[in-house]
Length: 112
Image (cartoon, rainbow, N blue to C red):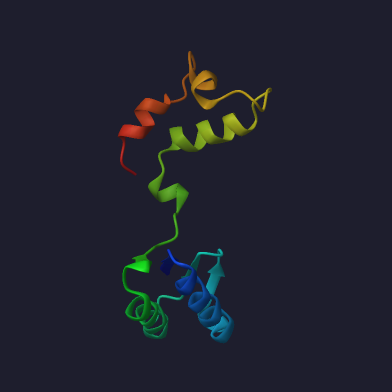
């Protein structure tokens, strides 16, 4: 998929119009940003926006995250345990302290 992010009012307006006109090529819209299909037509739409608005439009190529292929089991298990915690207001650092779950500092330093 292609991620299109806009940084000006004019670029957001054009993005909104492109999304309305070409709904079949838009995967999802997020206000200031949109995901468009990774096709040549999707690239045409994205490049057209950048050509018109220059640096007010950022384009990125994305790929869906397969959590079972890319994310270590320890991180998946920590996320599951953290969401099942007894107190919803407990921050992750406090939750992970003294447990087998990875510390936030450790996670911040590791690339996926």
